[in-house]
Length: 368
Image (cartoon, rainbow, N blue to C red; front, side, top):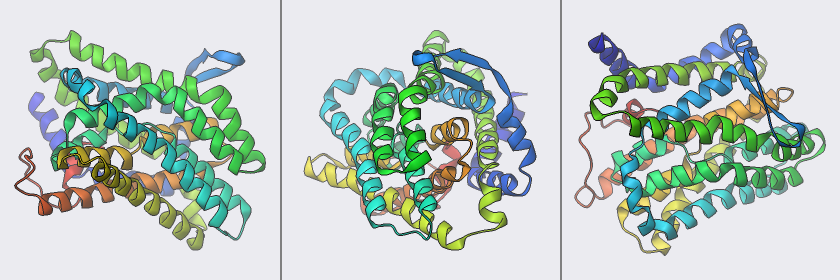
């Protein structure tokens, strides 16, 4: 049985990019099951100010992803974090401020044909920028020779602080938006986002780390392949379900100008985020390993959380998920470019773990 699981895991890891693209294509062509999955719920939990956190299937799938990420984190490295407090503070501040300034620039400079298009883009940017650092950034950073302690620290710090930081980002972009979109952002920041992030992100991550500590090394090795396989299946189902409400509307009657604008904006934000990580590293005169950790940490956000939050809290505006979907793909492509360039520019300065793939998308088998 373990051999079958391992072979299935390796097959999916090698083809994860294409499987993800297929999940989006399936959401476009056969959206019905995905929409029904979004409607499934295990009840709700009370939250402050009379609000409630709906335990929908997408939220539970997201919680499983984050628990798996916590289970796979190398928590023994955390004892080295005090050495990097300055870099962690700068990285967290930069990852918080840049998306807000970028959203402000878009609101001032972008001139779409309809104001509603701009509002959808702004809300999407708010959800992209206010999410914690993606757990996959640690795998990309380590593959490229980045500092694993700094990478893990950025993920954990942004995750644990997200119930406090995310509402601030949503409020600030809410002041740039208009009408119903502004109201939705302010309501989400005031009532729903903190509870959602604690239930779906913070607690599962901590539970995963606690479970890792509770299990012996032998037990972890036995369950790890099965958990990784379930994690990939979970990721594909979650992406399919979330995209089912947005992609049919976008591509059945496509507005190619709007899609091009969204692709341009999300690509620009992603490139700026990676570039800012490199710029800050040079300003602080840190080594190449720290620079790579900052670049991946600033450039990669937990878009799975953003998609679930958008689908749960903003069901009347499915178009806001388009920027998040685009950014999710773009950040992986830019990460691949940074990985390849880092290997070519400093092959002897950075110690890298062995890898059997050299292509642009080969790192996808480490997980998304």
